[in-house]
Length: 309
Ligand code: RIB
Image 1 (cartoon, helix red, strand yellow):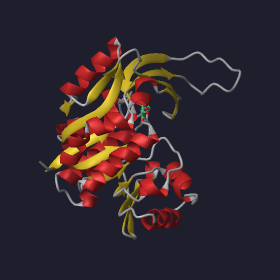
Image 2 (cartoon, rainbow, N blue to C red):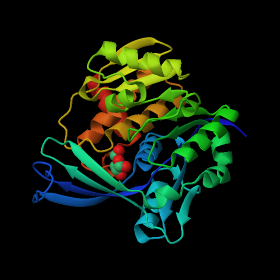
Image 3 (cartoon, rainbow, N blue to C red):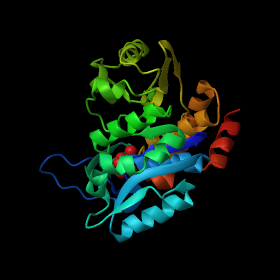
C-alpha cells in the first residue's frame, strides 16, 4: 500500500578514511597529514542519515560487504531511524571505501573503491521494488551502477513515486533516465556536465535549469556553494541564499542538504521553506568534521533556524 510520506533512498555506503593536511599533495609529492579518522560515509548513506535524523520515515536500499565495518555501519544506520532491511550483505565482497583529503581551507578531494556498492544490481533493485512502490519519494545519487539507478527510476515512475536525483559524482546521463526524474539537485559542475552550460551567475543557472526542464524535469535545484541554491520550478527561478558559518570541512554538506530537503518536502513544507531547512542542516554539517558524524538531528536544525530569527 502507498504511504505518501515515506521515503526510499537507494545508494552507496562507504567507510571514509579522512586525512586532514595543509595542502593537497601534487603528483609525485608526499605530504605529512595532521589528523586521520575513519568515519561512516557514502553519498547514499549520508543522505539516508540526514533524512533519518531529520525525522523521515525512511528505508534504505544499499549493499555492504561481508566485513566488520559493514556490520557496524548497518547497526549505526538502524540507530539513525533508518529501516535497513533492504541493505544487502554481499558475500565475499568488502564494504565501499572513500579516501578523502581535507586541506586547511576545509576543501576536500575524494577517491572511491566501490566494493559492495558495485553489487547493487538491477536484480537487487527488483528484489526491493515494493519498498520503492510504497514510498512517496525515491532519492538516489550516482555512486551505484547506472543501470540500477535507471531500473529503480522506472519502478518509481510506474508507481507514482516521485524520483529525486542528486547527480553526484558528476557523470553524463541519458535522456531516458532524466525523463523519469521529477526533481534534480546538481552542483555547478554536475549541472555543466548535464547541460553544457558553465555556471558563473544566476543567469547561467537559469539557462542550465531550462535545459534540464526541457528534458522533462519539473524541479531543478542547482547548489551554488556559498551563494546558496538556484531553485527553478517549471522555469520560475529564484536564488535562495544559505547561512554563513565557519567551515571545518564540507564533506557531506550536499548530502545533508538533499536528505533534509526531501524530508521537509515529505512533511509538506512549501519548497522555499524546505530549502531553508536544508540550508540550515547543511550549515551545521560544515561546522563539524566527517560525513555522518557531522549530520545534525532535527532538534539541532530547528534550534539553528530559531536562532536565525
Ligand atoms: O559526499 C561525501 C561522500 O562522498 C563521502 O562520505 C564519501 O564516502 C563519498 O561517497
